[in-house]
Length: 257
Ligand code: ADP
Ligand code: MG
Image (tube, rainbow, N blue to C red; front, side):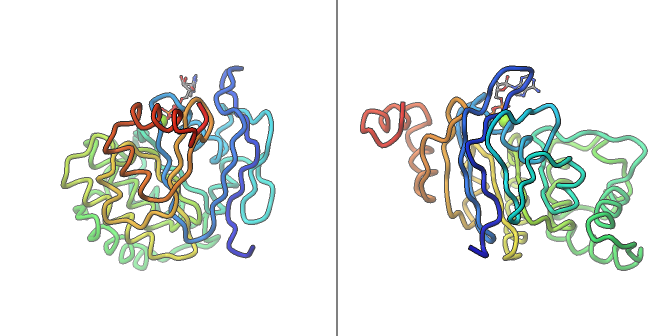
């Protein structure tokens, strides 16, 4: 039981009075990587926001337990300090705050102490090397004028620097060229070496998963997890396309229709 990190039980989530998640269960242990797939509009991002505690997403039933505590009512800030991290599908642009100072202040909040600039710079330089990012990016305003690929790299840089305990990556690979996907994947791989952390990767593509360890794959349709399997489920879906896989699985009775 010591390994249990996240337990989602019967979670129902509404946005603007419309129920999106209809009673979702999920259990994630430390050190595990879970992949979440599913067609557009299934509710994948909604789950990410709900786990992060975004107030727009109202939990109407069920619970979220994290590190043994019920965090269903906790604020985003508190969850972030406790090590939950959500990378956005569309990262925000923030004028006036550099990427470096943003990461430094997040890290200080997380660790509860001031960081020496020199130590911070050295750590950040190492992480930027993994991601093949030019050091000057650290001095640029957060995501301002960053290309899609640079924004995603900036998010993975945060992942490497903050070393969250539960990292949720929402389509961090979408819209990236092959080289950028590889770089992002290398960053995620570096994160996986941290055995205390767990990953929930929301993705459509399998490219990012190629060099990664994957423990479980979940398929979400209409706000419900309809199938859970191992890595091979990703390949099945990828080979047949989502619709065909799903129709066939319903026919076979291996998932609910
Ligand atoms: P996915 O990430 O699987 O593509 P989403 O979680 O983004 O799906 O969306 C699931 C459903 O919830 C969609 O019908 C979407 O329109 C709706 N939804 C999500 N977020 C919002 C929001 N902030 N306001 C209104 N509707 C939303
Ligand atoms: Mg989404």
